[in-house]
Length: 307
Image (cartoon, rainbow, N blue to C red; front, side, top):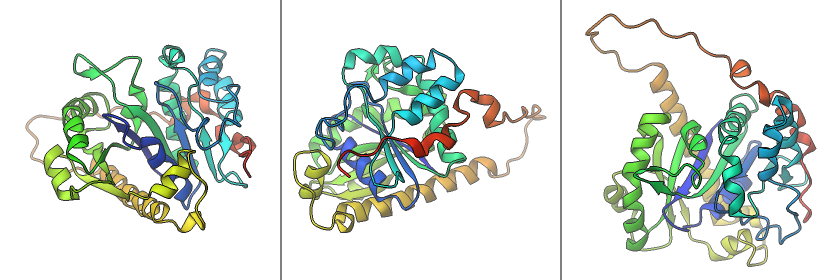
């Protein structure tokens, strides 16, 4: 399926959008709350019923203990978003001071996300939080760069306001350069538009010079519930926000499939020199032995305490 990473220039509803996409998926889905500035789902949607003993930080500790330890810890620290565990979440950091400990663990976690998508059929949504830059590049501690490098799509979340566009405009070129140099290419970059403001999709696309790959309506009641500040609306699954998120996931899957096909079968060009021999493909299992067994253990994720 698809690994989609969401980022923003400033708080624009990244976590709420990620939750909506995860909850609305018609396939198994996983939300990884990987914002180095700290997670909000624990205190928000879960109303502090999930303790600091569960979550992302513990994976950094496990990764240092050995290859299989990460696989065991990853499954053990997931929390179900529904009764049957079809939708799960990895709660984020409880303290931004924990972020440096994850610097060496991001590549291994990126491999986990890849395996869940490619072999497990999961829709994986990564909440990467607010993008932090250092000298025009991703900040080494405050941005989970390897997760963005390995994602099928990286979406800059913006609201349909001039203020949001002004903030996002300064992030587009560094994102484009980073994904070109170290990621899956500039074609992975697009916009997730939150329709909270007067600007239309084509205006946003023109302003940022990026395609609007998906859009979500501004629905305060459902958004407040997902943020933990309001009650669950009646017929949550029928809400406009979750319906649009379900449509968005389909659009993103199609976009990722087109990109993969284009990369596998690029347009023919007249050769200017003899091509170098292609390197032998690296099997996923040998590239990421530390994630062996993750799929088999996923059914053991902790149950949502609200169910």
